[in-house]
Amino acid sequence: MPEFKRPHALADVTTHYCPGCTHGIVHRLVAEVIDEMGIEGDTIGVCPVGCSVMAYDYFECDMLEASHGRAPAVATGIKRANPDKFVFTYQGDGDLAAIGTAEIVHAAHRGEKITTIFVNNAIYGMTGGQYSPMTPYHSKATTAPYGMIEPDFNLAELAKAAGATFVARCTTFHAQMLSDLIVKGIQHKGFSLIEAVSACPISFGRQNKMGGPAEMMMWQRDHAVPVAAWDKLPEEKREGKFPIGVLYQVEGRKEYTEAYDELIAMAQGGK
Image (cartoon, rainbow, N blue to C red; front, top):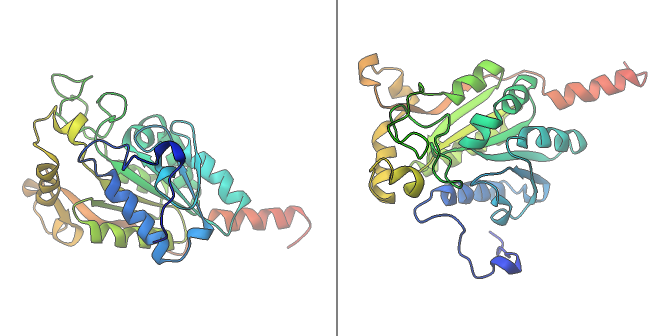
């Protein structure tokens, strides 16, 4: 990859993330995919508030920061103005699955040609370890010291129900599979969401006594099940585990920007 040139203020900083945070793995995979596909000059990314807020420091492409939860709306505007560009959002669970839920639902429903990288570390990491919608049942957080009592929230299923035509999930332990899924999401003609199950050793791991970064990565290894094997598992053996891979994919639906351009042509007197 081309040598990355940091802003002067961060010239001596390796990363602003906490020790063991796997945001760095996701950053690297996204950057490598963009570089290997040769699309860095045609890529525009959007990062909102939260642990994702400084993603623009780690990608050598055009980046725009959005208000909390509003990355899909900003990405929509960018795609309208630049229909030939690859547009992606980079969002955490506190952002995408909480304040930004309506944004992601409607972007998926419209079928925007946007790729959403959903980094799910199950906690509000930047602001002190509050629980998010993705915090597992009975897990602890600063705002749930006796355990999370809300049922588990499945954002991938919500995206599918909303109309997303490519939905995938992987972990930061399964880096090669995650990279392959990012490629497929970029290539998909329609809205794609790739959930990256990640680790937050400081804000989530400590509160839930999960050990250090290595132990949390092993947890991902031991609890993720490839879709083909998941489909064969009896219900009782699925407890505490989750499927990874392409969860849902539909081809052939007209991409929204294309339909929008046809509408403009019609309004201007075309056929």
